[in-house]
Length: 93
Figure 1 (tube, helix red, strand yellow):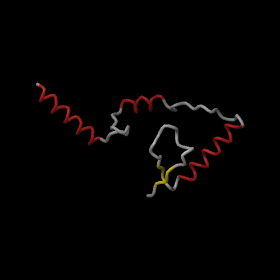
Figure 2 (cartoon, helix red, strand yellow; figure 1 turned 135 degrees about the vertical axis):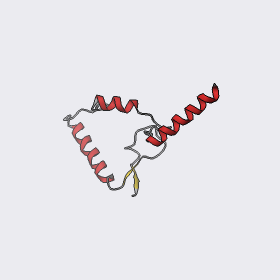
Figure 3 (spheres, rainbow, N blue to C red; figure 1 turned 90 degrees about the vertical axis):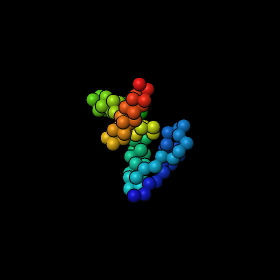
Figure 4 (cartoon, rainbow, N blue to C red; figure 1 turned 180 degrees about the vertical axis):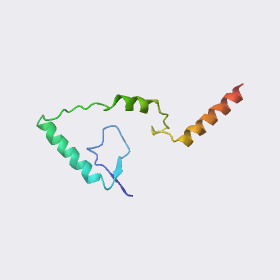
């Protein structure tokens, strides 16, 4: 599956790396953002959005362990981290 970078004006400021999205979704993403901007100009929708929709899902996501890039870890990666922690604690004692 191919990935297409979003245009620079769409990507949030401060990021040096381009943001890649699914190529099949690229045009729909741009169309949706244009429609949202049009509605914001007419003051039909709010410019600011809630950071998350569901409190319970947010709390669950905040408890999940993450890797160095911010992605959620898989069960195998979590088990590997636990083994490393156990080995380190055994070596300290």
